[in-house]
Image 1 (cartoon, rainbow, N blue to C red):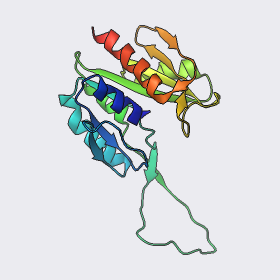
Image 2 (image 1 turned 90 degrees about the vertical axis):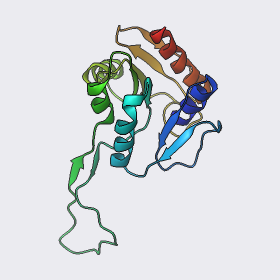
Image 3 (image 1 turned 30 degrees about the vertical axis):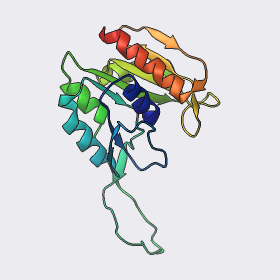
Length: 185
């Protein structure tokens, strides 16, 4: 969805910075400024440093919530005692940006939920101080990851809920952008 949103925003005339993790797909619009990152922390650093200069931030990446405490640069040999991995939380990009946003900035986030989908998405919207959240469901065929389609529900801070049918990610991106534009006009 992030790439589809970047392409659609550029088509709308926005100056787009796309902080992009390792993927095989690239934006089609050549005006999209791509900032390549390889870790959750490098993504957080790029987003946090760029946020003060942006009007709208759309946080579509599925960033890992945890990262290993220790990273090994070589193969870990098997041993009879087993292996215990320790993890630490990554920087919560949405929460960090939400805490520092100005009244003129808009933040859109995403929620991929499996249980109590609507309630969990609403809770995330307010906990992270977002303006709108895009709810994806793993229960819907053709939605979420690994598809060229998505079925989304948009929820804003005023509890307006817009449900959309399954459609291409490009069409879903336009629905999201149209909602954001309607909120700032």
